[in-house]
Image (cartoon, one colour):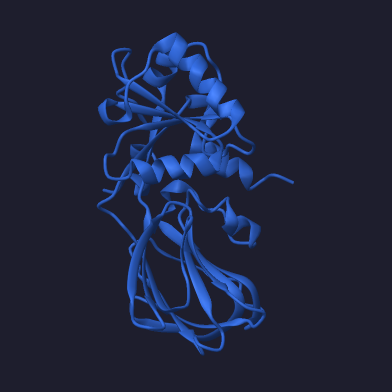
Length: 271
């Protein structure tokens, strides 16, 4: 059974021990760099290539960069907030880091994979842990056709854009676009329009995490559209396919009191 389909499996105790080799990576800010220096002075330093655990110091943007950087190694990543929002991060504390790592809970994430074909037929691929979004490039609205697993579901969406997000990314751009917040164990992806003009009342959909969502750009030359996977952008796309990349697994570590499932649930009752 998939970890994200089983709430108990998504919340296992970390295997971290005091002997684990820890690498510290910091965002390019004064606060994050100072935090890294403090931690290295106290706990020593291991090169990322030799590490058992990575501690990411920065904000949510830096956490995404760290996830992409170590995507193919499946190293557990423990983030500490040295930025602003810090939804994917633990509070920064210099004291007791080995103990925090030892009792941290694991959350396993699968990224989305975006496959694009541009108007000239060139193909590209990128992955995203938050969302894949299609966005209009000019003053004219985008026109998109949406299919799920090869079945056309919406013949024409006229909009500023549309996105597909993971449960972990549902509190980011998706929430700002009035999409639903998704519990980690729900086993679904959110498909959310961005400023839909026609059909005006379409609010989006929830689709199984096993589905492939396809977008065909209508009038692509007249109404150019870009596709963005986290921070990788492909311009002038004609077709985009999005699916969950099940063979890639990333492990995030959280303090028990920073339980990510609880934070996502709590977010739904914020006023």
